Amino acid sequence: MDFHMTTGQKAFNVLNQIFLIALSIVCILPLIHVLAISLSDKTAASAGDVVLWPVHFTWQSYSYVLGKPEFMRAFWITLERVALGLLVNMFLTILLAYPLSKEVRVFKYRTVYAWYFVLTILFSGGLIPTYMIVNQTHLIDSIWALIIPGAVPVFNVILLLNFFRGLPRELEEAAFVDGAKQWTVLWRLFVPLSTPALATIALFTIVGHWNAWFDGLIYMNKPEHYPLQSYLQTVIIKTDLAMQSARDLDSLSQVSERTSKAAQIFMGALPILLIYPFLQRFFVKGIVLGSVKE
Image (tube, rainbow, N blue to C red):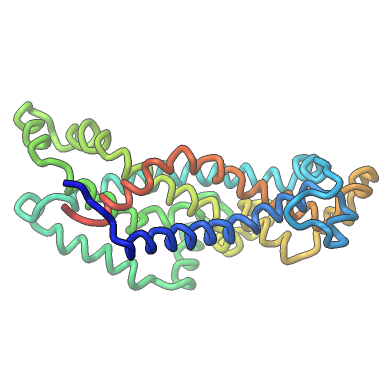
C-alpha cells in the first residue's frame, strides 16, 4: 500500500531536518573553533583573530603538546582506564543482565533483584561515604579507584537485559535440548546475537570513562596520577606553568598558552571522534531494541 504524506507532514519533515542541521552546526562549531586556534600561530590566537579557520597555519602547538610529559602521562593513564573499565563494565553488565532477563518462572526473585538495582539509579550512597569506602579499601591513588566504584553501570544493564528478553526463546530452548548449559547459552548464543546492544553500551562505557574528570580529582592525591580529563581541567582553569618555565625558546616564540590549551583539548576529544563512526551503525538499533521489551 502506497503511503502519501500530507502537506503538514512534509512541512514537519522539512522543519525537523532544518532544526537538526542547525543543532548539529551549533554543536560542531565550538570544536572547529578550538581546532582552528590550535593550528594558528600565537600572535593571531592571542589577538582573537581566529574564528573557524587557522591563521598562519602551524603544527607547533601539537609538537609542543606531544613532547609534554604531563599530557602524555595523563593520556596513557586514561587509555589504561578505558581498557580496564571497558573490560570490567562489559563483563559484569553481561553477567547481571542475563539472569535478570529470565522470566519469573525461571528466576523466581528476578523482579526483586531488578528493582534493587534500579533503586541505585534513583538513590546513591553519596560522595563522602563513597570516598570513605575507596579510602578504607586502599584504592586511593590507584587506577582501580577510577573503575571499581562504577563497575556495574545499571543503565547499561537495563538496556542489555531488555535486549536479551527480546531474543527468540526458541533458540534458547533448542540449545538446552542439545545439552547446552546456562554459561554456554550466554556466551555462545546471547552475546553473539546482541552485537547492536553490546556496541551501544560499549560506546557509553568508553565515553563515560574517557570524559570522567571529577573522580580523578577526588581519588588521586598526586597530580601525576590524574587521568587526561582531570589533567585538562587543571590546565584550563589554571595558568599553564609548564609553558611559562619552558626552556625551548623556539616553542615559546611560536606557541602561546591559548594555542597549547586548544591543542590539548582537541587531542583529548579526538579518540572518541575516531571511535564513534565505527559504532554509530549499531547505536540507534541498540538503543531502540534495548529500551523497549517486545
